[in-house]
Image (spheres, rainbow, N blue to C red):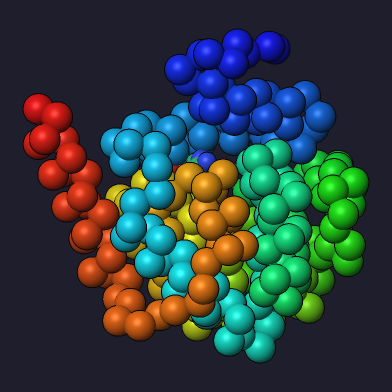
Length: 236
Ligand code: ATP
Ligand code: MG
């Protein structure tokens, strides 16, 4: 679909189109479209920009990944559709492994996502042959690789489901998420919560200097909620 240059919601519509294409290519699930809609609603509340509080979390995330022994980035159908090139560049910058890990798992969708990432320059992408299981999750939801997510000390799980984020946290990993909903279970289970749209957060993380000086995740989430409520007060 062509979107006129002048359309005021051009960026948002282009982002939606990437997901619709993702569904057509068999890499994004239909449920992924709904998840995106929920994210968009929160993005509206933030003003559709990276707020300074989110930038602080992005810096802390870059630092944690750079300091890790085995950092892994988990990819799902939305991440693959929205930021295929940048997520590969980010893995490069952070010396992190990429692992495809799906909530609505099918082997076919996993292979399509791996092919899609390879088309964008990725290599050695894990997830095609799971040989380990995250404790506490039912079989399909818990599958992962020993080399990747299972043995990771720091995992970046963007747009992740709450149960899985909590299960990873119980494994004593440092869990980093990108999630526009500061109230989600994932946002509150993570050690570093980036409340920002993935289409902005990942490019930012390619540029930002690492720093975790004074970073406190609970405080950061409170600040996001305060930011939103003050913004809404101002608009009211
Ligand atoms: P939880 O399971 O953590 O309680 P949930 O069930 O509401 O949350 P899920 O569908 O499990 O949500 O996870 C997807 C999350 O990703 C949602 O919180 C949604 O706000 C967020 N999200 C969707 N699209 C984006 C995006 N483009 N950038 C950042 N976050 C997004
Ligand atoms: Mg969920």
